[in-house]
Image (tube, rainbow, N blue to C red; front, side, top):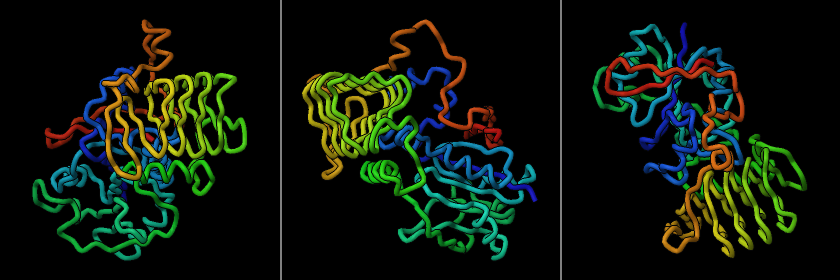
Amino acid sequence: MELGAFVVVPGGEDFTAIHEVQPDVVAASQHSRAMYSSRKPIVGNDVLQSWMQRIRKLGVQSLWLTSGSVTRSALGAFARQGIERLLVIKLSSYAEMDLTDLFRFHCERRHPVTEAHDSHGELGVSLLDNLALRADGENSSATTKFEQVPYQFNGYAKRISSATERQELVGDALTGACAMQPFGKQIGDQVWIGEDVNLDSSARIIGPTYIGARTTVRAGVTIGPFASVERDCIVDCGTTVERSTVLPHTYLAPGLLIRQGLVDGSRFEHLGFGTVADLQPAGLGSRILSRKSRVQPSKTPTTSPLPADSNLVWEFAGSSSGSQAWLQVQL
């Protein structure tokens, strides 16, 4: 019985960004994506790829990516192509789930729809049989017609639909409370850095902390504890980043105190209050290109940098409905 996989990047985000040959251009434009986008790295890791690794273990040869909602008509197109069962994952959580166990549970219960739950509710992971895939109803939810059998997942799971939840996952990854590991080299007690980091000798790094690839940390800077400065950032002289995340392509001006916050370019969100401030007017923060792009502006990379699974093949495929673009990934 042929099994397919379908991953939904929520919130209308640009799900094709990983395929772009010039990711810095995409990052600089910002679009209207949420600061805690599910596609932005977490201590150098891509949540999408963590799910793809689990999907591959099921023996799935390819999956499809899309954004927005999933309609019955869209899933029905897969049924017409011979897909008998479809795994649907909404990219709104990180979960260390054994999908083979979910598949076994689904087969044993013989129910059209199985939905994964943890103690906090739905995880956005479901299995649908052909009967559910062929259900009618354009623009309707893909799983509302059938009673859903809950699959109770008791392992590690973390939603990433808010800045606070995202920061909790950062902390768990830095302290070993989950299987996600910082993508880089460990240089001290719970301190990791990515490739080509420019770290001033006077900078103070307090673990647990992560500094991403090609990031520049200037004189007198303090980073940590429980801090993640992702790739291609500049933290200017004397600034402190504590219990916070700085997302890629961000410049922080000298002398700032970033505590319990999430910074994405010029936007700062306080984790406790949820308030958002624009740092750009006062010159306190901005969006920048990567160091590689600034030094070699005339060179165009032939492939996008992928932290893992570099042998993946990405192909664009038009949807059968003609109204929704899909990106097919050969695993």
